[in-house]
Length: 185
Image (cartoon, rainbow, N blue to C red; front, side, top):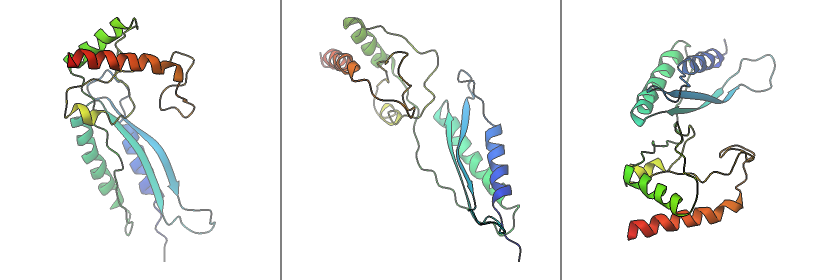
């Protein structure tokens, strides 16, 4: 009997999905698929790998594009796996982060709060590229996402070496207080 190795399918799926990347975050079809884990078999010489795991993170500029790509991913996997007779697979989506849509009124509140507190206000030229669950709130309620900024000597948020700089807490409290005060009148 011949062993059924998942390697060929895992490589083809991975190569295909990574080839669809468009890292230009200013583009309407910005899409990034990042390989997080590729694990095939185990340390057992003389046998075919019996199982494998492919884990990826997918990011897109807008939710509709992400949903479309999710369907494409599942089609690509289905079409690839059937080429290897007897190969079994499952697809599981672990986390979904909706796009954060800032409303102009909420942005204006943040801008005013920054001015009142003497804090610099800067609009990012491009959105953050990491996932954030705050988007679920802005799909239900008007809102905006803003950052305080920790300076250039701090590892970026979501980096493994990031350690929250406590000295920015006071600025954050003043910002939220000013926003709440303005919003509530």
